[in-house]
Length: 386
Image 1 (cartoon, rainbow, N blue to C red):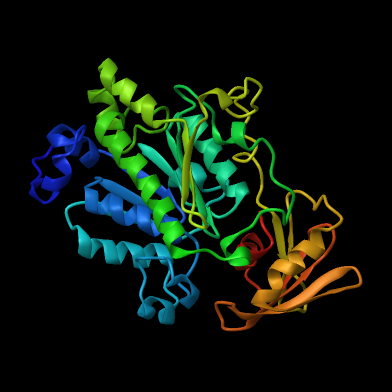
Image 2 (cartoon, rainbow, N blue to C red):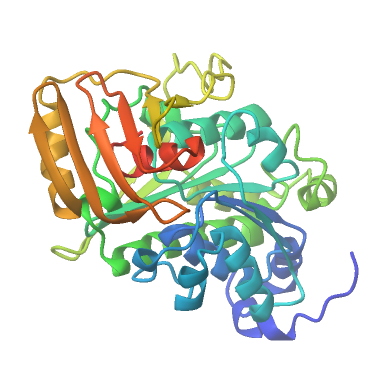
């Protein structure tokens, strides 16, 4: 390994399980962060400041003024220019630590790109905002035997966990075996979110990342497919870990940490026993989401609109009523015969057109004001659910 000046990490290296050996492990690691929003910006910044050798940031979206309340790497200039989040984050982080490498992927994280984007990863970090993409990332983690850090926050609540199904404990699909009914899950865009909650959830994720990699993990979970990046060197050098390191790794894994800032409650739940012996993913090796196609989206002929057909239908009769209640704060929406219709007050397409929605009882959505399928999918994911 090339000699690196670790002076800047002195305070971190004083901590138990870090030291120079731990810092060298961080420098050999490659963390792939999927999603560069409220959680992803926190995780990316802390990984770069801590000296992770390669940090890859994946996000399809552009910076918007509504992001600035909680997404810590972006500025008003980024929002005015509608810059891609991944590129804006990469540029900002290059000013923070020039001794590490930051990579940016400005594209959809979907089945066609998932394996390519995560090539060479030592650790995967879930900073996503919808269940379909989370389950896709879980498929990648299980197939490649790579540890996965999960996190989420909405309202004033949040949670995080390190999942290591290649070693012991559940995969994410053991915990969420089926996609929730369309529109049944709150999102930051529909229910709101406190920036403190996303900051805590992101910091919990990065703490799991850094402690796992520095204390026990660099290369410990890098399995098939991880050999093309920095994680490969760690795997070859540390394939036979001492038992105390493995014990430390397992102590970090499979504990779900939860908090609620409404009453300042914090708790943790052991989830090692939550592994499902009949799980189709980690036990059956059936990678349904990795092998699936994205929700069908097509431009409607003669209209400035895209129709998005969900991968599963809405299951509850009250779907439209519940969704209407969540969308009303965001614009003018009303239930009409056979559909929910309306227009957002502050959502615009990349070309500047106002965005409207028509949502049908079966979950089908027409996004008005755009002819870009990926943008239409992102609107549906944020406000309808996915």
